[in-house]
Amino acid sequence: VLYEADIALAVSRKVRDSLRARGIEVLMTRNRDTLIALDDRGRMANRANASLFLSIHVNAANPRWRNPAAARGFETYFLADAKTEDERRVAEIENEVTRFEVGVATKPGDPLAFVISDMLQNQFLRESSELAAVVQEHLSAVHPGEDRGVKQAGFRVLVTAHMPAVLIELGFGTNPAEARYLASTRGQAELAGAIARSTARYLAQLDRRRAAGGGR
Ligand SMILES: [Zn+2]
Image 1 (cartoon, rainbow, N blue to C red):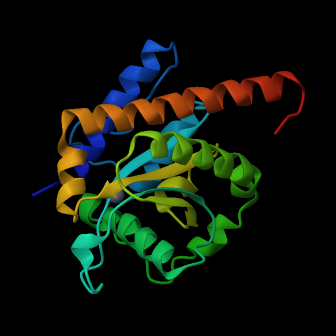
Image 2: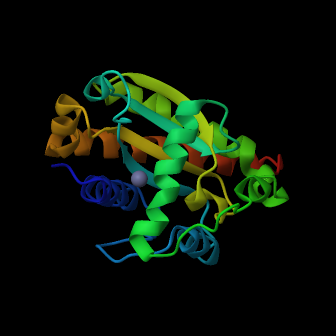
């Protein structure tokens, strides 16, 4: 059995190490199995004045699909209203985590769509979609699975982060070959390396743009 949290944490730690080796400061919102509400993770990043926010995950096929075990591949999301059924599915899974992780249920009729239209999010929409594109491009250079592209959906974990923010689905734990890759030391090192390179590249771009007075 492949546990999403274990894989995600292992890859996140490798991303952290790789970024620190490049002189980039990293704050982990979850360093071991401590449970931190999704909403609080973004707030932690705000308090730290972080330049960007990465949320790393493992995807799961919908058991109702015709051939769920066949689904594989990686995708990177930024925060915006979901447009497709599949984007809504992933947002539902990731937003559900609140319930299991901290016992705080999302209130029925929680106006997530309203929160997304918040000015603070719109401000970072373009930067977040650019960051997502850079991450997805670097992942495609190493990942053996299908490039499922840059996508958008309403993720709780991204809503409270007032900075460019993306959510990465490393692959499908429900696909046996992909699960082996995600659990392997080599696979984790490749994925973490790609995420770290794309993050460093994006931060350098952001610095240049802001130094040039382009603002955001
Ligand atoms: Zn997840």
